[in-house]
Image 1 (tube, helix red, strand yellow):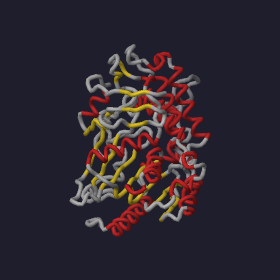
Image 2: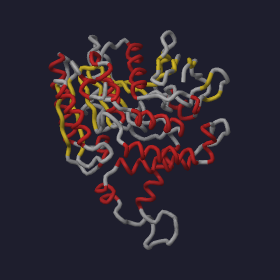
Image 3: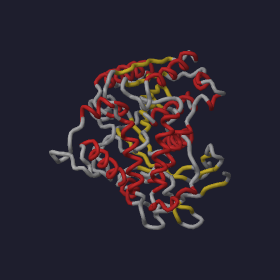
Image 4: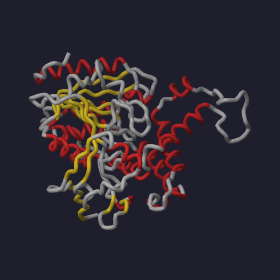
Length: 397
């Protein structure tokens, strides 16, 4: 797929995008130097929506980039403009927390292909003024990172004190360390892997097929038909959400408890609490996420294979890196199990990198990185304090 894509129009936005852009910053990038995507397309100009917390110090040495996961966005630590809920990493970011805006300049950008203001399939084709939909080029994790690097250039930030993220965010952190090692002083990939497993690709394919099987999907042109593939997207979310939890967490939270009834209904309504919970997760997801963006972002995760991009040897991705690493995994995470984090640690050791690793005992599954995990907080606070001392970053307690 070769060619050049023109500017995304700002006057043809989905309602959720409009609300998001009204509450965050955005930058139009790539006008003079288009972003060359891995699929061969030159994208530009393109829009990146982002949010910041705290202030950049005089030395511009306290910037922290948070990379969000598949269904996350730039609203890390504040009331979300679409859902009205707290920020997705409110446990990590805020006054007195691990990432305190009093000490760090925190940046989080909606990823390329997203649906909260950054250019993606919702953007308009300047040739006809209609949404790109499936005509938008397929993007990769590396493309997302290059767009973030362009944003930092736009902000006048030469390098990061830290890049941090979990799940797909952790993939971006690894890509940052591999592609821009001199721009990342410290890297914290959490609950992630250097490539997507066959099992994870399989779960993503189930979700994509659910969306594409919805008759309201209209071949990806649902906005032109004023429809929404709500049922398909809800099923995709329900399927994925199961992978974010552990069996122990599901059993502890729901077991076989019935939902608003004392006996089995002998039908196909939500008899069990766990069924009702998943249906709720699916229906609320549809309100804030775009179906085509879900296709594009899951595909970007599927394509991620850091070793393949470096001659099939993962250690080659980190040869000579000056970056300091801290990797975190969780015992009950079966979506990104600990052995995948250990593979990255072994590659970093082979590259003689400075690396720390901790596996945290938790029964909360993959979602543990988003929740109250005191050991994770203590580990990361200690790592960042040590990194700040080495870097000479003043004011970090």
